[in-house]
Image 1 (tube, rainbow, N blue to C red):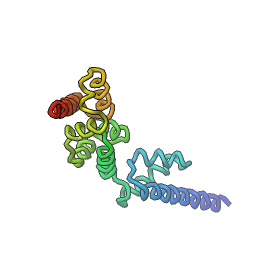
Image 2: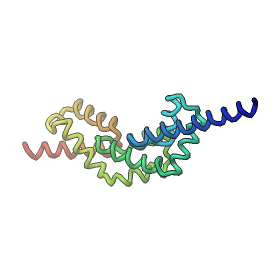
Image 3: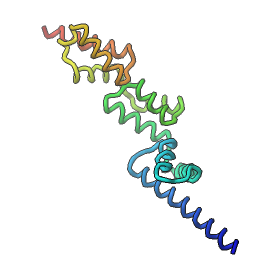
Length: 168
């Protein structure tokens, strides 16, 4: 009787591990996931934390989950959405990426952050509006919230203001 219960418990655990792996794979086929995010999502779906960690280990070993690939994809997507390096760096750190992975992901973007800040400011503000100090502060605060550093924001606004002065 005890052997039968042990056998059943072993099957149940194996089935739970297989289900955790399937759920993890289902999440990964939709989009890249960080290790931390995948374990969290599996936990939210009722998977035991130990089984979630084991499933993520198996998925990583099989090449389905890769934090470096996630970081590069995430950084490219966020940069294309108009976010700057400061914000992307913070968001990747929140996903559990170390400094080396973050630096590699930002380098993989091959972004000219100063130019991206200028383009974002051009889409959001008219050069003529930047003559007003209050509007200029608002534009700078917008760029800072989007994740550009102070130097990039100031340079972008100077470039935009200079473009407006040429057309007068």
